[in-house]
Image (cartoon, rainbow, N blue to C red; front, side, top):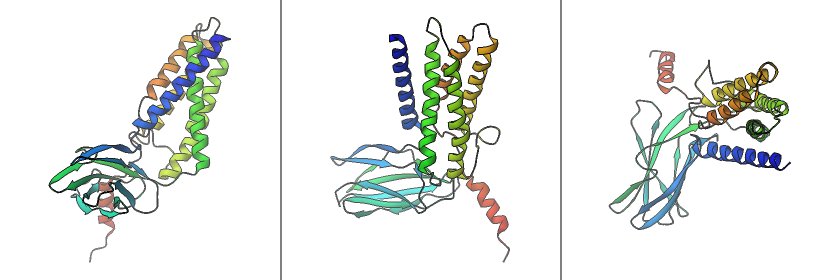
Length: 276
């Protein structure tokens, strides 16, 4: 009994650590930090994802009207020149906007602050990339997150079952598969559809690592389920699938996801413009 409780505690810890890691390493997580400008500390948080119907706001609280700011932006992976826009100071905050983009469109941007002859660029010299998407209903997001949490939890618990004297994998393996199907292949594509008007952006239709890693994890657990019936020693297959699940989920969430090709879009728009 003590070992069972311990295994569940360890499985929960592994799952929570994985979820936090996914949250803070994904390309949609906001970039935040603190910079020093002429002796003043300025805390900032810059978005990398936006689901509103209007322009994406860029705001930096300074509480100092002597500090000015400039927003630089351009379309991602395009030949556009950088657009330079001064930020306006309102209620202690420097405010600007990034122009709204089509679904899966991305902009590169950076913010530069200045007081007198001193300047500082937020988040360093590397530009931040923000992706535009449609909003996803909460009734899809919550079940999706819970299902993926359940899949990872039971996967971790199945791996720990390897260390029991008389391991019983069946319930853990089938629970993992069930949550993977629900979260990764039903609610996951629904999330994609609401966000980017696409059902699946992994192989063979795209390079979205979130979709691809879900498919890899599912295949691994299908193999483990088959091994449960066919293999002489199925515990190694279950342990392998559990480890593989952890490895693939170390890949940041939403990496290589849906992305609008601006150069291709511009060429298509040029062709559709009738000659004058």
